[in-house]
Length: 188
Image (tube, rainbow, N blue to C red; front, top):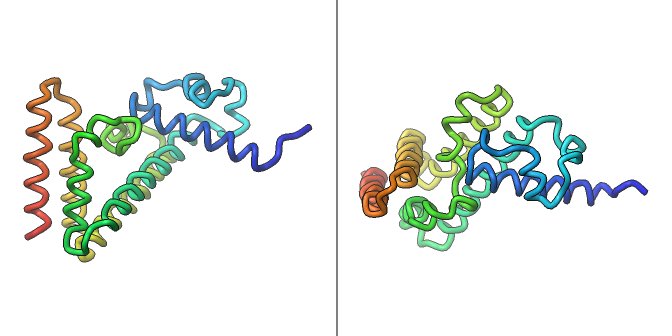
């Protein structure tokens, strides 16, 4: 008896969720299709019934992960008064929780270096999604695209550095200094 369309979509969502989480934690190269399928509770053989290639999965995982980040930040901002929305986003993005919970955090700091060497398909989706991220932040900044790009680039770099160092005190200082700097940047 063939599976229903709903079942196939649910299995695809499980695979995508497993891949998104694995890529957030370990990057693209370190994660194999069998690991992704195991994380979804499935066998490796079923992968190609849902995705043409690992590149297609990476592209969709990027789209999914960046959308999740935008939604999370939007929900956070929506709970704040109008004049504090961008400050709330900054606080959330440059928090120790966001730094430490890789499986739920922004995928951009984890994958940017690998994405720059990925296929055109992956880079195209990443470009579209980072552009959506810029637009979301720009909207919070009175449609200031230049400030949005500077803010996001600084926050991503700061989060990446805070995750990279093995000194917890230095990591916390990076986040604190960056928060202070970008809050100043957006208030100018």
